[in-house]
Length: 184
Image (cartoon, rainbow, N blue to C red; front, side):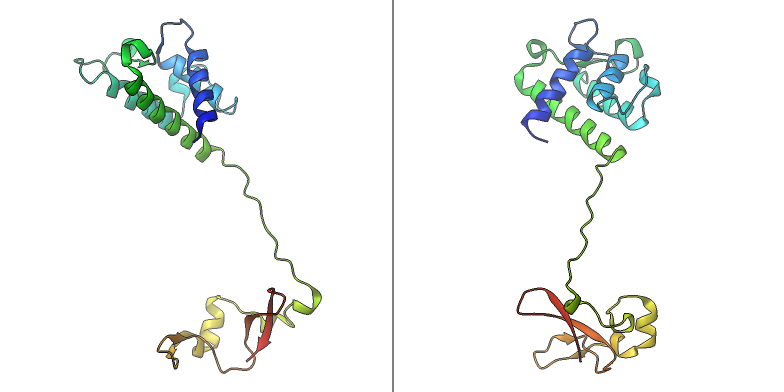
């Protein structure tokens, strides 16, 4: 979570402070979540939010007012203080770091970015000759070839998974650096 997202988060907090008192109440927090999620999370009321966001709000609001008696039991008077003059720069920075990071993580969990898929690049001379020659970790191969499930020590003392069954293949690096198959 870098400087630019942190700045954007603070700007979104300020924009959601509808009455300008630098106290983010529950419904203002719902507006903040809408802004932080770029409109992916909608809802006009605090209680429409996912429970994880409600928890983040109360975690920060109650942490800030821990010195006050029963400050978190009154819904109308519970808020997150974003006033630098009241909080001090260190407390405000710590508060914003927790708040912005927690909200960012939750939004990312709810709306993960698509993970790019990478397809292996092979040339026709580097492909496996048949499906039965392809190495696999499937349970059926292990049960059909018991030699794979037993490890015998090699001359170096390290376990070896190489089978003496000539129908199995293993990947070996070629001079081009791309894997190829060679039967044992």
